[in-house]
Length: 222
Image (cartoon, rainbow, N blue to C red; front, side, top):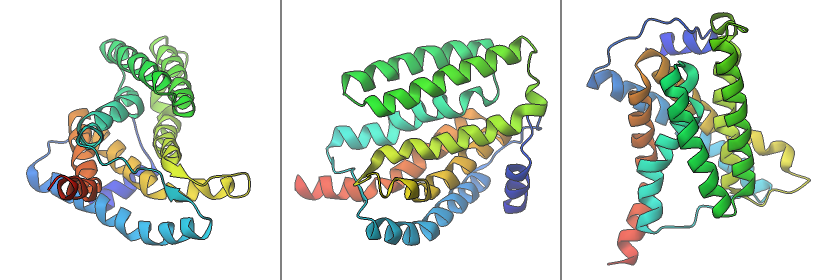
């Protein structure tokens, strides 16, 4: 599986034959992604500490945890990976969900994140509409779309960092390398096994990532 994953991520293709997935394969994908992230997170964390950049996730409420586990993965998969295999129905779903998300972010004063979501939304629609009109060939240009979605997925997580200023801004892309790795895993899963499996994998990953906050919440309410 690792060999196929690396081969596909090196040369992603649009018309890839979708495979059936079983529990064993899903667990392999999960372990492959999590081990890669754990391995790279240690030096990334140390690097962030040198530049006084910290994670700004301090909310440990039950509502925050549930949103992070069940809602955010669905929204992010729709935003970054639903249209990797476009259809008119998916465009309608994409449009409705993203407009709703942008409205919520603006209401919460998350203007930077709302701006990123808006940019992705507009670009996604342009690429897909042009693809439908056969102005661009998705088969020959899919590599760009695949890498673009993976990169933006990583970069949007810069919003989770505190302490970024003019002097250390240049190193922030390095701090989201773990998210970049998971972006490749999610995108690979979406293309090879289907969208619902990338969503489920994302939910499982976030569940483990937020497990410390779950325990903190339980301890605080004990």
